Amino acid sequence: MAVEPKRRLGANYWRLWSATVISNFGDGLSAVAYPWLASAVTRDPLAIAWTGIARFLPWLLFTLPAGAITDRIDRRRLVAWMDVIRTLLTVFVAIFVLAGQNGLASPDQIAAGTADPPANAVGFLAMLYITGFLFGLAEVFRDNAAQTILPSIVQPWQLEKANGRLWGAESIMNSFVGPPVGGVLLAVAFSLPFFVDAGSFALAAGLVFLLVGQFKPKTANRANTTLRSEIREGVSWLWRHSLLRPMALILGFQNGLNNVAMATLVLFIQEILDLGAAQYGLMLSSFAVGSVVGSFTASKVSEKLGSGTSLYFTLGASAVVLIVTGATSSPVVVWILFAVSSYVGTLWNVITVSLRQTIIPDNLLGRVNSFYRLMGWGTIPIGMFLGGLIVDITEALTNRDLGLRMPFYLAGAVYVVLFFYSLPRLTTAKMEAAREEAVRRKEQES
Image (cartoon, rainbow, N blue to C red):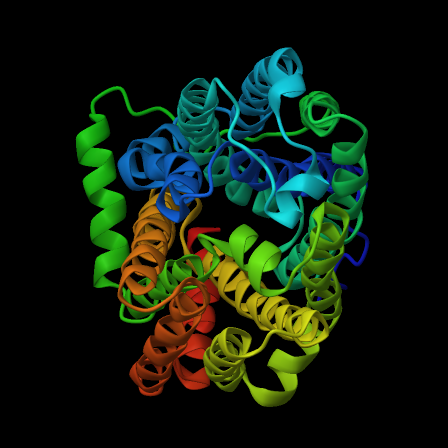
């Protein structure tokens, strides 16, 4: 007799969900606060891009050892302690900004282009670069471990639903609630959103510590192996996989291209769309709208169109969004385009992350995920650097307006190539075959 699948996600899941909601509210605040702080310190596109590069550089340097460590220790504790570290780093930033905020221009002055750099601009930039790098290092370990926790909390057939609910909550707080509140808090005091952000990480850490159950990998005892050999095992498994390898490569190009366009977004918002801090926060709320819709409809879209067709749609739509964004000066049009971009990004994530959590063996999940993320996220700092460089070069050859638009045009053009590359490689048939093979393997193991 077939066993009725478990429908409820359970208390553990909702603790994790609550931690996600709280920490992503803080992330939403910082999504406005950090770029706006950088724009108060300098107007140089490449210098602003480096604030993001510093934060994502650890994904390029430390992702592989983070994956191996994730497959050795309690993943719950790793997530929680990384949130503790992020709390301490954010408190330091908040105190630094509080001490120097009297020398910073107001958000309205920045938006109007009448702001002068603070006397200690070099110190502010050094603080942003160093803390950004350390923050990114904590995120490498935290986020890699977090993606391996969910299969220990819910059943395999619940993963798409569970991931969808998580990303929906993330998006609401990260892009809908957090940014507008962050814009308001900035107007009160430059340091205020950073203090609130630190509190959100502390609360999230406490909730993750409250998770109960077994969160160590099933084969955590590896006394006779080295980190290098374990990393090699994860890398080899992914690279030999005919579906996950091209999927990781495509994700890498996506993230790189998106960050070519978004590296100097704060300047695009201020100078092309002529928006202030509060309006900037409202603009970012578009990402939440798209993500929430995507989180609740992704599994249905995937079922209706097929996984492969759904992924093709995300790539084609992204190309259109980027090119049209670069061509317009209308905040309303850009808001709609960002919502579409977020929707297709969520659709991609729900399908591909759930697939990975299903088909990767548990004892390899941390290491394979880490290599996948290295390929997918390691391109982010590269894209940010190229984005800032493209603006500088185009501005020098033509004008500032075209310079701020050019990253969107170039990224959209490469997305078209990426779409055609994906057609024979990310088919629905290949994804279904991979899922079926994983089910057979787990049945044999049990």
